[in-house]
Amino acid sequence: MEFNIALLKGDGIGPEIVDSAVAVLEKTAVKFGHKFNFTPYLIGGCAIDSTGLPLPQETVDGCLASDSVLLGAVGGPKWDDQPGDKRPEKALLGIRSALGLFTNLRPATLYPALRAASPLKDEIVGDGFDIMIVRELTGGIYFGDRGYREGNYGREAYDTEAYSVTEIERIGRVAFDTAMKRNKRVTSIDKANVLESSRLWRKTMHALAEEYPEVEYSDMFVDNAAMQLVRNPRQFDVIVTSNMFGDILSDEASQITGSIGMLASASLGASSRGMYEPIHGSAPDIAGQNKANPIATILSGAMMLRYSFGLAKEAEAIERAVDKVLNDGWRTADLIGTGSGAPLTCTEMTEKILGAL
Image (spheres, rainbow, N blue to C red):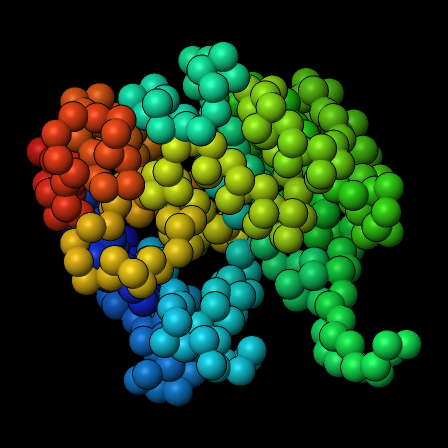
């Protein structure tokens, strides 16, 4: 099979980690008899430097013409003085919207080999946990009306949270369908005791739950969910929530796994085309030093094979290779202390995974 993949390397460590993922995907293609064609496009700060825009139209068109998209990271202090609509991060909202990507899947898995890296006690994590966070991606406060106005205390800024029944239903169906392939449990996170948008969210999710009688459904307020993730993460299977709540909770979930450098994500829409990226940032402090952990991006590539291309065996081969390298004790600098020996560079970790593959 042949697939065209758009590469958005971006800023900071983005080019390094995307190159690592490409190397693993290329070896996987050879191993299983496929062909992947990679085309790079500009996004984020590097796009600002080259074109004056964080998301050039050429990038949007290239991604729309591809079978899927692999993204590194965007942003850095170099572009902190840019106005809000020209910041590198604005490109992420723009490309998600342009591609119609309304779902973000963020698995939070504690690998047995990295159990010591988790800040949680052994009696809390037990044998590990495997959580899938389903985050709504193109609605809510990040896309609502915003601006400045004169208020009771002078000039004030405002951002508006708004959700429609349609937006809630479509993300809810993703969560329930995902749960049907896992342990058949869904926890919906909201703030229905305060927010009108959350009350609609809860009402819509309750109605949807009736269509999935095999799934155990529950509601939880977002503040309680933040506490429960560190108190007892094993109680969760699939978490579904809004854009902003999902942004916050998925980062918390990443930390209790031991390192944000381990976690992949998939952004999906109605078509098979998705955008896949590590959930960590551009890490400008180590950019160009060959210190980055490439595993999250490599696992993002595996998610691409599974969700966009239907290549489950190929995805599993990459995941098993990562497991083997970790079980053998190899670590990058962010994971040191849970393995043996000196930390591997980004290149060296990639070579170990290629060898295991």
